[in-house]
Image (cartoon, rainbow, N blue to C red):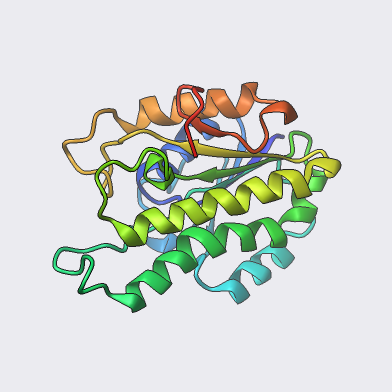
Length: 227
């Protein structure tokens, strides 16, 4: 059975990834901080709920060891936070929140890649996916603000680009995806598309991409985004 591991699986894009892959018969390793509260995933065939807080690197290592014999075809680093808040823009930045935003959005996906590299090597498809954001594009930044989130995603992009080069010899493709502005808890009700459209598009990109596309910054519809 083809296997996908998804972080931040209990809601939003992560939940939709789990639903869509499970519906197609994949084995889904759905990782979230509180599986006992993941009511929307409970009872879905092919879904295995696993406890994981990506900010806890020791827990990442324990999970990797726990499922060490499980091949992973696609690893989707979806878990993320928006650390910026009203009243804490430039001049009043919350540096503790910035540190946590970088930990969760930038360092954790790289740690996941390190911990689960053996699992990816045993998989057939060998796809490492990072859910980034167009807000991580330096060239596209015409509005400023959101310093915490923007820097975390720009750094994520740089890290994943490096991994695309470092892991190419192992046959592992690294794909950096912008999901669009999606109607989720983070995206808000005024977003342009729903999670179903976003995830179906990203799944198509993941399925159709080859090592030639590894390291590219791609929108959910497959178009290339500027760095």
